[in-house]
Length: 386
Image (cartoon, rainbow, N blue to C red):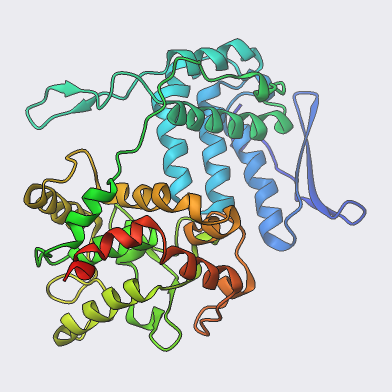
């Protein structure tokens, strides 16, 4: 079915249902496309969907899953942009979904097919510099399998309303009970004492200490600028992050942009860092040695050096410090408070106002409660002894 053989009509605005509708008759069968987006973007969306349908050379359930998944990704990009989630959807599709059912017609996909994808999923082979292959683990964790299921669910939710496939109840898809739960390696309180006693003087050491005491993501810490810090109110505003691909982003999600009130211990780290790097005249708080923004790979290198010098757990990473914070503080903070610290819950007005550093009750309560946790006390043992 070649696209050039058909005259695609202009979409018409349906005032009653507030959406654009494009109807086309092909080979005696009427096909309808719609978009609730107002204005020219909605018209183009209708025509784009029609083009995709015609160019596929297939109709509805006769379309192969590989083609439908490709259209799903294109539609997702148009709606959400090229974000981190798109990268994950591409990876899950390429490595698990397409190899298993890519050649099947959408209308033939069954619940069993989707369950088999989960059951048969294996770690992705990696390639070493010498050309040999390896896998980072023997079996996939429950969390990773849930992520694959999430990609499948998103695809089905997109494909079913477009009549590419029948609706499949994703609640019936299960994660095998024997799938391993990957535990996070963290620092014990004795390790934290070692970390904070006798600093090594390594360039990013304060950034890592800052993470232990705040639970912020490594990328969020590297994304902090001096304008984000208000020494008068003792607050830091998280506006951006530097991801592992060295790109500056607005954060993992909307809730990731928030205001945190710093305890005196954390405020001291910030003040020392700004004073130490003042000669560089950098806009970044935890900048690199020439004043530019640092990368997560820099943090990892520094952490490996600290591990060797202080005898800390070898399997820990900078991200482990975030889990360290959570593990040692969750019992002392209400769920609503710790979620606001981590950027997982809905942001309050105080969290949403950037620049004014308005402190809400949760931020203030968190700062007070954190100061008396074993985590914070472990960082001060040497000071008290002296």
